Length: 425
Image 1: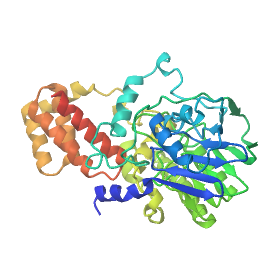
Image 2: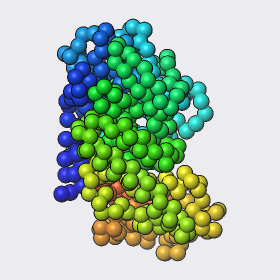
Image 3: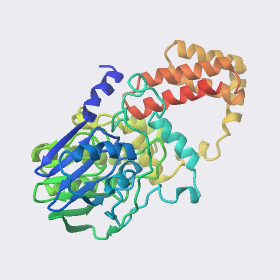
Image 4: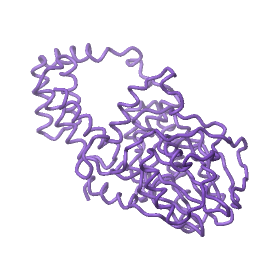
């Protein structure tokens, strides 16, 4: 099966469907990048997460209205990522609705433009990671954790700030006659809460579990995600012994044994990355060397929910190194490296000039040494941004690398980068 075939098969995780998790408990999957939960109570509804856009929220609310016409009284944010908090105004429908989140909730939607930071760089990389602008079906297949085709109208526009913050690590509340236990469970996001319905055994796990190797580092750019804390949260979830697991992305899991195995495997994978990467670091390996040193053991590598559709082992290894040791790889030669343009000048002089370097890039591409072709062409363009042959080689190399990716983020990033460079020429 080719990488593209695997991504297309993975689309089954995001087929539009309203799952009944338990009596009066539902999960909308495939209508947006993230899932939305519905709990029907005595006198009203509770919504768990609200998607990334107002249009997606409208579509989901229309489906929920086929189940119940009771008013929405409570909205819960499992965490602050924008794909979970941007449709709240739709579900609130102009009413004064309670919004519950963890005490550490902090969203980049709130006053982001007024805060210092690399906002433009983050947005550029986010667009590339998710392939925004790529043609669905041929270029963008899926998002790794969600459908490749979903409504974009009202992206990030429907957020409502929380009105009730959960302060305890575990707190029980009843809303519309339904008892819910909120568990602080940092993982993909530092403010994540799991929401457990003890009466039915349903656990809403936020983004701490989904049908892909966990995104321990997002190439769009993120602060360090605490690997140990994420693994500990999975331990906590397993102790609850849920009979239904409702993830923030992908289809729900049913059955206590199935869920226990999945949570244990997920936790083991994260702890393995920690221990094996640390082992290599203690042996003096740099990040570039570690990515060949750390591979998942066989009994985890073939698990369907540990395929590298969204996160990757390599990115996780690099993130763990940077998150625990910082940017310096330990090699004295990299303390003060040459600027990229100066390095390219010296490299070109060494091999016989810019044109020789450009030919070498083209030859590498023809020999299917695609990554090497990309690196060589990039050196040429640092010296001459108008070099059409090197630009052509670089674009072709990125497109060829995209085809080799079963990771949706990497595929999208290569393809959109190639398209953007084509447009700029």
